Length: 170
Ligand code: FNR
Image: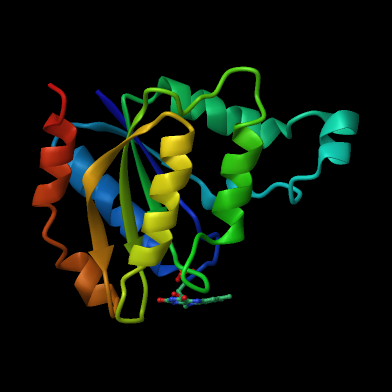
């Protein structure tokens, strides 16, 4: 069993990155082999068909696709920008969908997100659910949403949902 955790913010002080680290810590303490995908490695030129015709799919996105294919399960941790998915994450997913083989097909995905506002990135996760359904991934019905996030809230996070997710489908 291996768990890939992707976070959609490369900001140094990102709360979603902190959530990514916390989830990895909990998973590893439960004996799960965990790979925290470095957020900066999601960074690719904004998708453009001309760029693709000239250069193909960026190599970092090919690496992302390999990590997705190799993982038994995936958690995608997302911030929320204007009620939706931040461009770093959406662009990386769009690029990954241009590969000959869709890496997300049949994958089990849990959505998580944090925001300092009252909605806890829930609207971003709702939009991501649609994107992953389009890519034939199976998205867990429950999500991990942390509203009004600060460091203490992440440290105190009740992580029962994580063990449930890891058992799902066993
Ligand atoms: C935001 N933020 C935000 N928060 C929210 O709860 N709902 C929203 O719709 C938005 N919209 C939004 C748009 C843009 C362009 C920015 C830059 C920010 C605030 C956002 O949740 C906050 O900056 C988080 O700290 C971003 O996540 P990271 O980078 O800390 O992980």
